[in-house]
Image 1 (cartoon, rainbow over the protein chains, first blue to last red):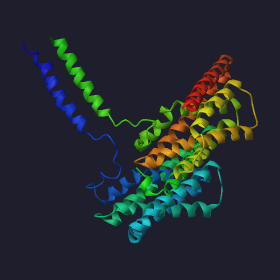
Image 2 (image 1 turned 135 degrees about the horizontal axis):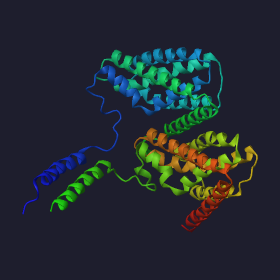
Image 3 (image 1 turned 90 degrees about the horizontal axis):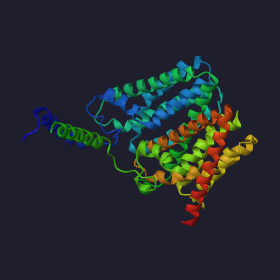
Image 4 (image 1 turned 90 degrees about the vertical axis):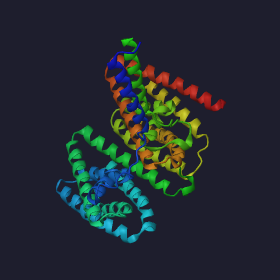
Length: 211
Length: 202
């Protein structure tokens, strides 16, 4: 009275799969899975898994896309160099100073978001200055993940990732050059400003109110 | 017997699949449980009052035409974030939830009415309600395990709801579309009345 062989095997094979599926953690652990992939890739992965850093860079790309194309390379270069230096700066500053980096980055998100939403043309100095300051803060904020890693390699990885995100962001934004595309860019910039404003507000909340 | 075995295998496979997608329930009304992007993204989608109001903002913008069609979706997240910031830092908004419910009535009625109005007036109406909606989101934010992800999620969901509303509002280009939009505006307003009744009675 046994079941046909193949079907029994299917069930026996499915049960361990189901149990294995139960063991898979469902929540995203953004920064905890970076160990063991090397300093360079840890730098890359840290930036790509930091939503606030990504949001700032995309906001910067959107704002830059409202400027002339000749600014693209300069903005990317400024952010790249500043992010590279920023990691070393963050390591020097230590943990206490790095706590404020999230708030500073949120404030910059508000600035680039508003500038993009309003299609503000504030001049090359403002654009490049903000790219440099933002790069420094992105780098300094990422320094928290360097213990046990090569700071130089981590920094190279992080700054290349920053430059890549900016480059791809600019490529995408410049493709959206029709009327609806411009509106979409401005709406995206307003989203980034909104996110920055909320995160900035959150930095004023005592830690006891956090989950 | 073979059929029973096949069904059992299918049941095990489905159970495994369900186990993969099973996550802790991040309910709309439980303040401390909101965690991460998914919870933030679902927050405006699982609250019908938020959902209907956001879609109506998009539809109304499309009905009003340029510049409201793009100005409202650009301005709304910023003003909503201002309200959200107030909620985050704990500034109370008297009858905030009631205001959210009233926003559904008013925005639904405006969609049903379908008349043009000055952009400044439209912005003022939307601004008041954006603050109320933002405050509701913001007051839950400090409880989120990953506040940045939660914020990204709900801002994106809100923007996409506006986009959906604009898409529906484009139906106004067709004569029957106008009637359909007005009828749906009326239904939203009636749903809003139900929300108001619920909050006022609570």
